[in-house]
Image 1 (spheres, rainbow, N blue to C red):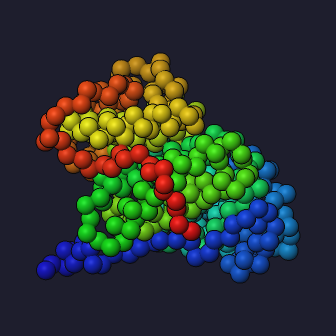
Image 2: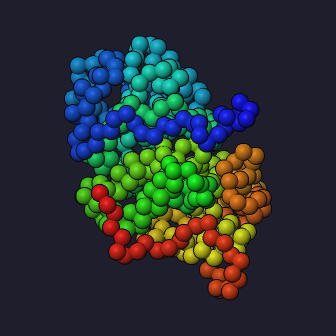
Image 3: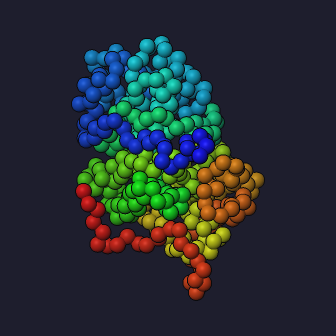
Length: 395
Ligand SMILES: [Zn+2]
């Protein structure tokens, strides 16, 4: 066996499964002082301008004995923003980074901490993504278009999930987080559903449990923010979704749902919607592709199930719902071409996809279910089975 084959072998790989420590609870930030001080004495808090103001009363008790500075990451996790954060680290002589905010703020904080070889604490201010957990940062252009992602050497040193802080975010962010977390199943089952590797099987099965939890509990959670079910759904979106990503590792990758998201970020008009909202729409597009290209009836059933669920919790079903009803054909083509470019995760689908096919899927996410055919050649990479009513998640 050649050396490069040995490196690519499934027997040798590095996993970044989870943060070294997770502290969660209502008001947990006030109690996190000693956990932060174990990592460093001169924290630099990185977030957006608005978030830095909001976080102040929550973090102040924990940081009062440590000389602390703040730096804004700008608007996107971009190369220019990262350079100015490195200056802020040098200026403050920071020895620990505290990232506060949503996906982009946390991605910027994690990446700059990695580049500067400093410990990193993540504090999510909403349940919109699992960025507080993962060893991955997305880098965007200054105009907000997705450019590339960077795998980090480890997950954060400390994750602080404070439900009181999460509750200050709009409901819409949790809805988006549910959309992003749902994608774990629809993407992992395609990219890794046939894997024989123990940890991959574990990741895919966890993704299915996560989907079931969300389908069962999301509506009740959204009806009672701050309540017990709401906390469980926050944990599902922020913690469990992150753990699945870590367990599955680099081989358990995203597929078309995130590729569609990445393509949409190249349309300026899409910038008013959240990551998880675009991903949720991307799941429908992925299922539609499986129906159109493979004739997959199970994908069709899964799409109908999700359309109903999206309608109930307010996730976007169409381009129009994403505010993209005025998009031109040329713009739609541009985003489809980005999603289909070489190296895109869309090519993890078990069939070829062209921009033309993708455009057709993008405009037909709510198409009615085709009449049941008796064609037994249909194969089913997805499990669209409705959640069994007797399903009780184990603690
Ligand atoms: Zn995502």
